[in-house]
Length: 327
Image 1 (spheres, rainbow, N blue to C red):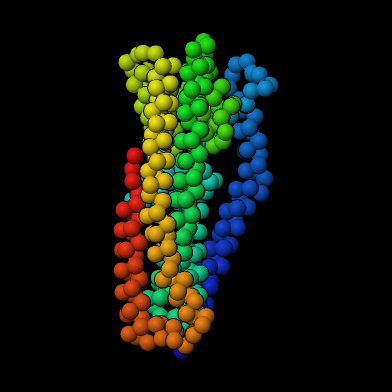
Image 2 (cartoon, rainbow, N blue to C red):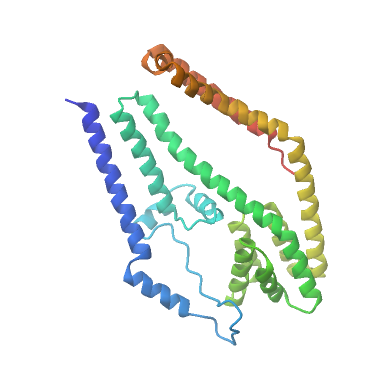
């Protein structure tokens, strides 16, 4: 019995099933006539009251679902840590649901296992490749989330100053939010506009700002949210509080920039030491393939590879923990 062939056939069948399911989900979300009709109805719904043609239309915001199917939604709700991972996906700014992300992860794992079975790789090597795909995906999502949070934090002090000047000119807090949402760069403008729409829809200011803190995992945004919520409970000059918060955020960003410059040498060293073993292995594989191939053809070589990768993982984690300094 040709076990690798049957394993490859089974994994290929599962991969094709996942691919068909993914295409069906895309069709149902973007091309289904019923979904298009529902989207048009939602776009036609606006809040009651006078409207200005120059103002952005206030739309009802749909509830974020974990999956498009009810049975998958109920099943995902029972998983531990599902809300935390959904918040992580929300903070990346991608239109990616939890079910789509898990389907993508499952597809990468099945593809890696199918590739390992077809190439007759050892089981542990195939499992390592299957783990590498989801890790790379999570790394990409984490990098996108970090970049999005950095853009929001960079534009937040100017937005707070603009809101403070608007309130000093006589605007209410919600009107100041609308003014800041118009003039700020994205993605901060989208988040402030979402807060403005929620408040006008009837959500309390504290709840709308707390939802903003969930969507944006930034300490600077949390400072802004805490300052406004405390002021709404205790009273005080909100315009002056916003100015002081903007000054505090700018000072934190200055200190973070100084720390980043001082730790640049350590970051470069960590990058070089992390990539150097893999680069040398690839170079040696090109120059002398027979010499390097003993690492995965000989049992002792495989043990050395597993031990080396484990020690390298601990070393890389330790280096990046050392150079990561919180302000």
